[in-house]
Image 1 (tube, helix red, strand yellow):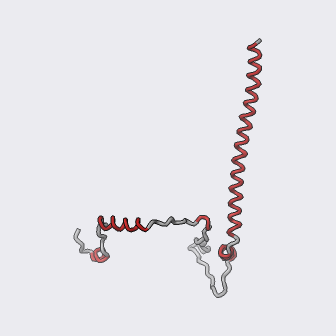
Image 2 (cartoon, one colour):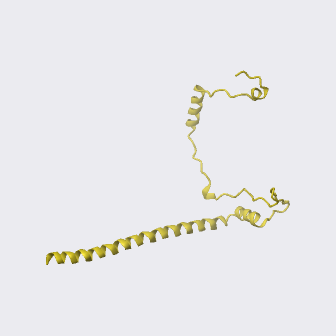
Image 3 (cartoon, helix red, strand yellow):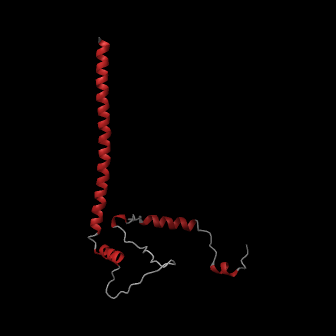
Length: 136
């Protein structure tokens, strides 16, 4: 009788455990979807902030519609196939600009002391390169 009760309890706990594990998996999937959508929202908000910048709006008007400022004359570069080439210059996102970390003044002084003690080897002079009579 005890074995029968333990078997029934094991089956009921196993089905409960399976349901619990499925729910945990579903919760993990939902959390991943939430994180993905929050990242998308952040990207869209950053794009919206970029449109508040007048320089970005001008750049987009120039790129998308070919607008010019008063007094400017426009031209288009045509490739060998006769089609206009795409512009390579883009306005960077202010959040993506690399920020340099200032160095302490003594690091520059120490680097110059080390360089004075170990000077780099002399480079070839332009006259040596052009002359052609350099001894090797």
